[in-house]
Image 1 (tube, helix red, strand yellow):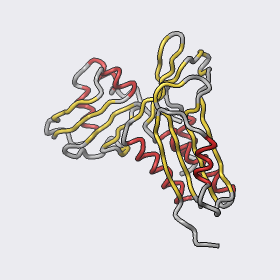
Image 2 (cartoon, chains in turn red, brown):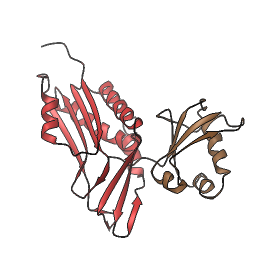
Image 3 (cartoon, chains in turn cyan, red):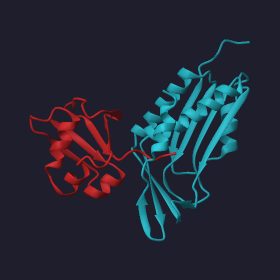
Length: 157
Length: 85
């Protein structure tokens, strides 16, 4: 058993789609200490608040977005024993069924990867500077933040 | 004090501006003071900052509270609560 290596952490903010298999393989590669990988993928729904959603647009704060995602990963590593973690968040225009966000967490045992993954998503939803705009047949509208997201993030405090 | 202010998403659309350089009067020390200063413009500015809508502020790309002292030449971003993920 070798000494625990520094966890491999990375973030990407991109308009291009991502490939779960490719991201998974990249995280798993070169680390035989990994015994569990948890993957969360968020996708665009076609229905929100009973209206048809034809497209979703994601705006962000270039520079701060990457920093805040990295900070969330650093906080996760402080709390759980992780071999690696990666966040990929898309920006720009997307359609129902498209992937928006990927969170991968890798650990020796599944408990750490599961909990850290949940924590990362809860914090991402309340701390990372992204804003969603929905396009419906009646026109565009900005999505409002939900209290339930604040409550979800608060439970980790 | 000179501050570079950025507006995102709803606020950018409402104000019709994404970025501006503000030379704040001497009475402006904190973020709260700057918000009050912006409110004096009236119209959508006064309405946005009348306390009825939540907003968040980041200085030099870190989330901060309203009582945080402003730093000369800072990049200040004002926006509605985030909705990513």
